[in-house]
Image (cartoon, rainbow, N blue to C red):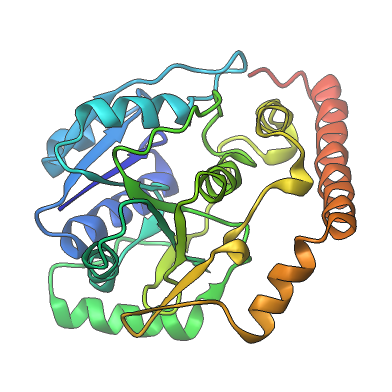
Length: 296
């Protein structure tokens, strides 16, 4: 079986609605799974009692006040009852085929794997009902039609064996680069990185960020810890795909793009583009902070 874990935000307003939706979906999609929720913001411990899930406690924070996702990864390995771990952002909706995909990969006998999927993004304003299988099937079908498939670098789900313990830098949650660092490190460790997008729908519920990206000091902090951004992998770099319950190698356009994006000159240009983007955002944020006296 599997241990799902996440770092929750304060259960207030719209964030309260979508986090409750996410947690309900996990419990129905993965019956028998262990769920551990970290964080000491308002309502996190209380929601664990309400939902009957484990409370992992508060986490260490960066010098700017954001919880460290690296601390959650370190502590879940000590707390988890099961040998397969799955980090999920606390706004992600799962459906029944998620657990099927994990079980399929587990049956392949892979001792070292990292499983993920591209997310779909959707506007969800109110509570969703997951207690009836027919209702979940209809909801899934609606999201398949209306929710937009996001880019390869937007990674909200990471599933891996508990024994894999890479030396994770002290990344802040909810910021850039740490999820890409996980994929880069897994590939470097010789793990099979598996993209299950074809068999599994993950829905990200859109919401306003608690701290707008251009006002967050932890953006550049995470980027410094992750290393050269041009070398960070995305799900496009996955070396296997799960399609119809069968593991396949990348072919066609995807294989061509993998080859192209791994060429040193192309990596260099990607690094320049990503660095320019993040530096511009951070410069705008510094200017706004100086004028608005935003404190972290």
